[in-house]
Length: 130
Image (cartoon, rainbow, N blue to C red):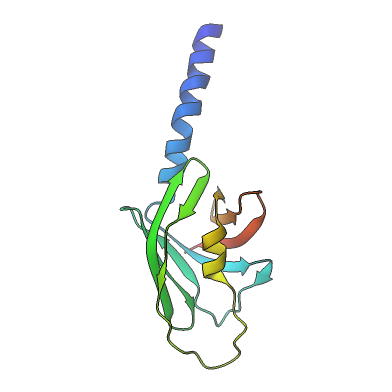
């Protein structure tokens, strides 16, 4: 009996990260906070994880970005992200979404919330599922 429980625990430990990583594929999120600051409601800031390992999104008014991501277990890294640089009217203060994505090393997902974390486990951004 103990041997079966131990085997089940080992199998769960090896299979859980894969299921967790797959849970990002095909999901879309909206940024709520970046760097501890609330993302203005007027800012269309979102993030979409494609099933083919690609990521895309918008980070200010009409600027979009795209690139690759790798998720394994609770680890998450974004590759080089390419972004459009279309001028926006209004205040230049805007959330540094691309900076947060570049620093991301892990994530925590609970229900409709996604938190991006740096290498020390500090929160970089909080998102809500669309």
